[in-house]
Amino acid sequence: MVTMSHFFDLSTPAKRFRFVAVLEAITWLALLIAMFFKWVLGHTEAVAVPGMVHGIVFVLFVIVSVITAVQLRWSVGVTVLALVSSIPPFGTLVFEWWAQRNGHLAELSDEQASGQLAA
Image (tube, rainbow, N blue to C red; front, side):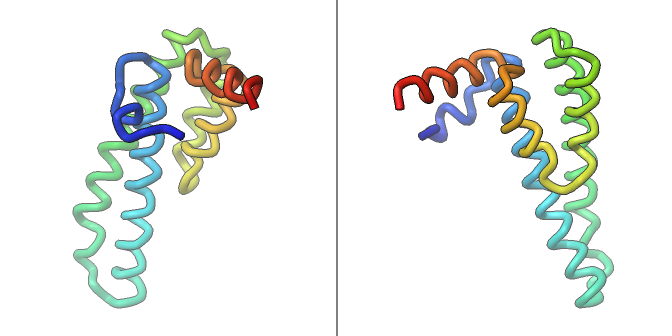
């Protein structure tokens, strides 16, 4: 089980990518909730802050994805998948899980592989 201190460890490209991927999914959730308040309950101002925060985190995710792709030597296909994963809600989480399982996230993939061997 990953502890909170491990989650906030941003010492490697893979760990930074995972952190921003999770952050992007959280801001997607906040935006979806805000859109409910706007469209169903009529609070038009509800999306202002979550929308701005999600936009900033989205741009950060794109930047971190490109930097991670260069540092971890991802193929063009894996890089495109990472970038496309930011479009659907929670897609970054799905990509992060896939990339970890398929060895694209360096030490995070190694930790999972060693955990599977020990099990």
